[in-house]
Image (cartoon, rainbow, N blue to C red; front, side, top):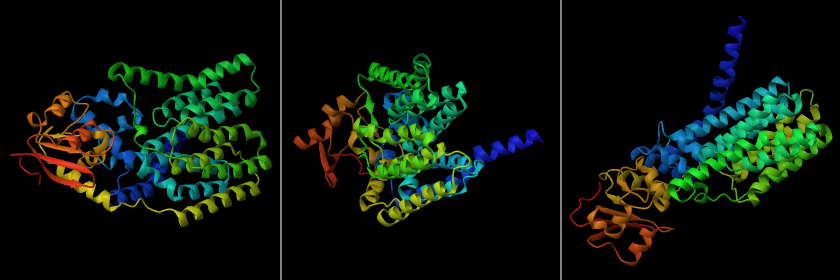
Length: 436
């Protein structure tokens, strides 16, 4: 009976609860996708995944940062795959936070977790950047083990915290300042002498630093560069979580002073990350700032503290319901991009010369990289100098693209302009069949 009870508990905790929480988030994401919404982040990740799969060069995944989301797309790369992964990650993080709150009999805190997930920018995270959703889950796990390590003083928890920080760095760069801050506050929390604190520093920071160093070395060795995907997706650092952190500070000062050092890590991570140039979305910032401090609330937290936390997240929910879209809303441009991508996908293999740095949204909607000749392909430079000898179509959009600059100076010889969408230009070689 005990074995069955443990199995049932594991099934509920690790499968049923995360799936149940993920389901409404997934339905929102799939509905938005069906309506024509595809975020820049998901389009960029999908384009690189298609390229790795269709060229049979899976090692290319390791040359782009962050690599873990790209790796997760390899088994089944489609426009729906990032939404599924993002929903599962959010479902797991919030389900385990709920279970933790309920196991400590913090019922109003559990209700506050539900309010946080119901905040539009938070649940839209699965539809807008699944990499940040996965990063949130890994950072939550790292923080959970860190809290256990500092309170229960079990060394294995410190090692596990460091490993999850190391995994998180492959999804979101915020893991770097957070792991450094966690290692720094370990000394006052545990009252460690200098020697043991150095060991703790090594345990928490070493996996992150080594992870970054290995990726950067391999990418530089094989590509002479380090391709940082987040350079494509600019996230301005939002200031809203600062207000939430001030609110938590009041609650912790009144009712939970023993966890103030823990709160300092969460409060300082986002501003420091922003100063280092590590962008993050509003949804990630709200989930990070709202969810992680709840890990440090112990059983017996006064009811008044729980009421304050609940009211704070309720006010936040009402504010975002009134000021932000409740669902990811496709624009007319999204619908046109989808139609163009589906049309381009019908071209023969590697017959469209284009640059995925500026046309990645169209390639993502194509759900394949086979029709395209891209900068990562061996024959790209030759085709760029003489398109007529290698391709039937040329498609270029404005941005950091040699191809676009070249055809703006002089249209490709032997090609006629077929159509133009905004500033994107499509040329068809004379004699080549028009795309359906």
